[in-house]
Length: 168
Image (cartoon, rainbow, N blue to C red):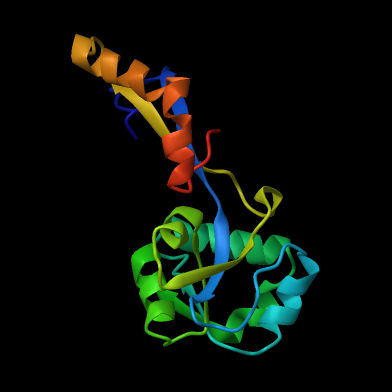
């Protein structure tokens, strides 16, 4: 939209942060985290409710739907999905044990002590989850340019990754 209004220029848009999808359970759940993607279907075969973002409303839901379709799991779990308004609401359903599982962003799971990350979905299963940074306007201010450059410095990568984000 901003490009169409000539308020932002493509050459000034840079990928800033990346994120991943994870399946989580309540921290006290007995299921042990795993790395074998083949175990995802076995986990979902437990026929438990799975909290997800609503694909009609939020990007989280669209990424989840895409991932489930690409991994040939959507039809398998469709009737068990509980759609939430956003990532925080999805996490709350698991926190309150209203659903046994949830699919959220890695950053939301990492910052929530009530959630246990069971599996990180492979990046090939959905479009890249990225958050861009951009300069806006024909003549950005010196402060805007300074912030834009500051955000791209490598020295921040460790702090960014501690929060669960990746560097695209």
